[in-house]
Length: 151
Image (cartoon, rainbow, N blue to C red; front, side):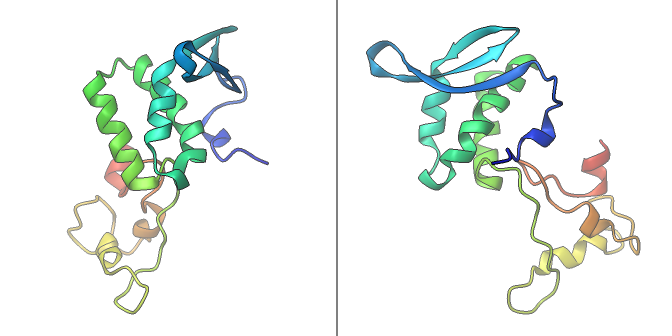
């Protein structure tokens, strides 16, 4: 099965997720992350994954290690990482998904999307160019709008 997260990592990325799990102290399950050839144990990863809703845990098993590693690389505090995980779980359920595109006011349509291309929109989209659909929400946090994509 193809991993949907592979598109975000180059083939030679230094971070590899080892799906083999090992029992830690006290029977706690821990995931190992392969970096530079040396496995690193991160016991909080399993706690975050298990805190995800049951239907999101498979996606969380891939997303949580990637997000924690990038948070560490960029020096995020614990509070910032808590915010990241809360936002990612709420916005995408730990799976980088595109926003469903169906603007309109009818049943099953998304009225707010009508504003994505409107003059004076707060997203930086250029009216008449189809920016609304092109720059619709995507990824872990549903990034939306030309301004956010190009910042």
